[in-house]
Amino acid sequence: MTISTDVPALADLTTLRVGGPADAYVEASTEAELIDTIRAADDADQPLLVVGRGSNLLVSDEGFGGVVLRDVRKGIRLDEQDSCGGASVHVVGGQDWDELVVASVEAGWVGLEALSGIPGTVGAAPVQNIGAYGQEVSLAISNVRTWDRLLGRVRTFAVGELGLGYRTSLLKRTMRGAPTAADPQAPWYPTPRYVVLDVNLQMRLGTLSAPIAYGELASRLGVEVGDRAPQAEVRAAVLELRAGKGMLEDGRFGVATGTDHDRWSAGSFFTNPVVPADQAGLLPAEAPRYPVRSSRPETTTGPSLGVVDPSLVKTSAAWLIDHAGFGKGFGVAGPASAATLSTKHTLALTNRGGATADDVVTLARAVRDGVLDAFGVELEPEPVLVGVSL
Image 1 (cartoon, rainbow, N blue to C red):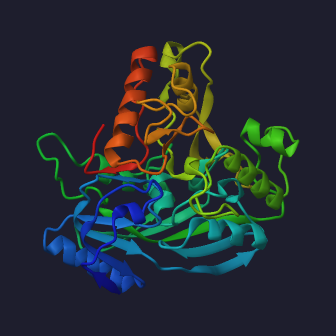
Image 2: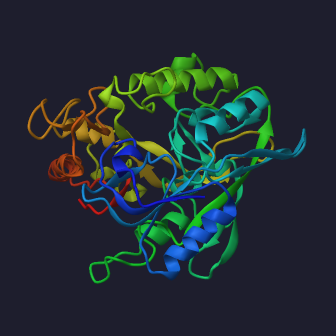
């Protein structure tokens, strides 16, 4: 375990590249080190921020008055594989997410291919129920082992206990639901009560992907929505689409570090609004409408998508932002702003090279308020906000 009071700025640990230093910085390379650090911080009533690749964080310019704990563990283990049960795979929380996707495509484990190129670690995947291009990690998870900070013990959640939904989970709700106006320093913020130790996945075997659910991806592959395609081709198509939107992590996938400020972001800054189906008529008539799928598969006989929840409708945050007057490259102070919307995709807020956290917050607030004024829809930030607020 590496413990240091010579702490790097959070700007050096996050993909947005903003944020000041922390009081202390720890890198844990084993599960015991991870748990010991969490215990010590909690016993001392020190604020705790557990980070992976820092791809979903916006940290204040003042930094973090507590312990930053980085999970640097790696490990993908195949526990069992057969044609009937598929592949049972154990992955530690600090494992790089896209390395897992590469391993699954190469091994013929179906269900992660459309999640290619998402920055971050495996431990963050169930917290956020990460998803992209019609696929979510919920359909591959069998259970998640966590450290329960309240009870001081390991707790394992089966997939059905995780409360997985669109960009949410029970794990996430123990963090975001805790702070209140009366108690802004509630104990489980900015790290949830449950810290992910490892994730167990159950995936079907095959060379073809799960059914393609996203029209843009189907079009790129030359197939119909609902069809399947070779996993390797799906991965390549997703990486091409993400590259065109500036949604690949800087310094990876052949992109030179520091050359494209559209990649200095936290990815999609706002989640796509989900509304009750009986209120969908309140959305702008021209706004896109997408189905919302559950973590329950459509079929148990092969790779599938989640069952559509008829009570919910999802619309596009990017469409709302663009049609509220915030185009690509928009900055509060014009195109020379230190923080602007990406020049490739309106859903990403970017650091143009010298932005502060306050610059990003000012831009986010302007976009959120503009969409609310135009359409009556309040956008919710996707990153964890540490020391700042909209």
